Image (tube, rainbow, N blue to C red):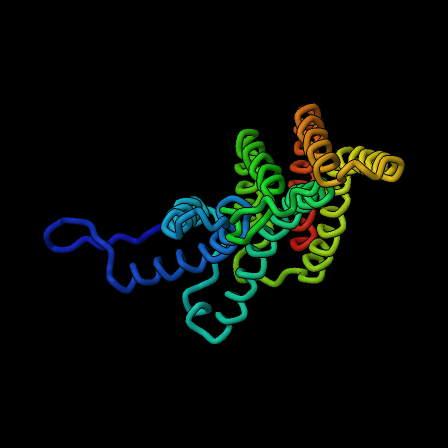
Amino acid sequence: MFIDLVTYDSGVPGIEISRLLDILLLFMFAMIRIGAFIMAAPITGARFVPVQVRIVTSVILTIPVMAYADLPTVEALTSPAIVGMVLGEIALGASAGLILSIFFAAATVAGDRIATTAGLGFAAQVDPTNGATAPVISQLFSLGLLVLFVSTDSHLTAFRLVLDSYNHIPPGTVFDFSGIAQAGIDAGGHMFAHAAKLMMPVVSVLLLVNMGIGVMTRSAPQLNIFSFGFPLTLSVTMVLLYLGAPVMGLAYDKLIEAAIDALTQMLTGAANG
C-alpha cells in the first residue's frame, strides 16, 4: 500500500488528515484477524499476559500485512457490509487460535487424570494460564508444553501461518466456515487421543499398584490403606513422572506438530472453500 504525500507551501511533505484516517481505518480492519488469533492462542491468550502486550503484538504483526494484503476499499469499510466482514475476520482469527488451544488442552487433561488416579486431585492451585483451579501435575504438564512450544519456535510458525492466510484469504472475503467447524470437531478428537497417549503409561502402572494395594489390604486387614497405600502411590507417581520425562518431551513434540498441521489444514480448507 502506498501513501500519497501532499507537499505544502513550506516544502515539507505531509499527509492529509482524511487520508490518514483512511489508513488508520484499513490498519484497524487488518488487525482484527491477527488480534483475534492472539487473544485465543495458547500463550498470548493466557491471563498472565497483559492486554497491553497483546495490543502491541497485534500492531507489530499488522504492519507488514499492510504492505502486501489485498484490503477492501474505504468505501466498503464505511458501508453496512463492514459488520459481516468484521465478524468473519474475528471468526477466522479466533478459530485459528482455538485450534491450538484445543490441542494444548491435551496436556491439561492428561495431568488432571494422572493427579486423580494418584490421589493428588486435592493438590490444586490457581492455573496462571486460564485463571481456574487445576491440579499441580496438570499445571506442570501444561507449562512444560508451552515451554517446548516456545523453545522450538513453533509459535513463530503459527504466526507465519496466520500472516500467510492474508494472501490466501484476503480480509473481507468469504471463506468456507463449515471447514473451520469441522476442523474444531476433529481437533477435539485429537485432543482426547493425545491426552490418552500422555497419561496411559502412568495411569496403567498406577492401576496395577492400586490393585496390588487392594490385594494386600484384603489379605492383611490390619494395614491401613491411607497410611500405607497413599505414600506408595505417591512415590510410584513421582518415579514414573521422572523416568518418563524424556519420553514425555517426545510426546509433546508430536502434539505440537499435530497442532501446527491442523492449523495449516484449517486455513487451507477455508481458503479453498
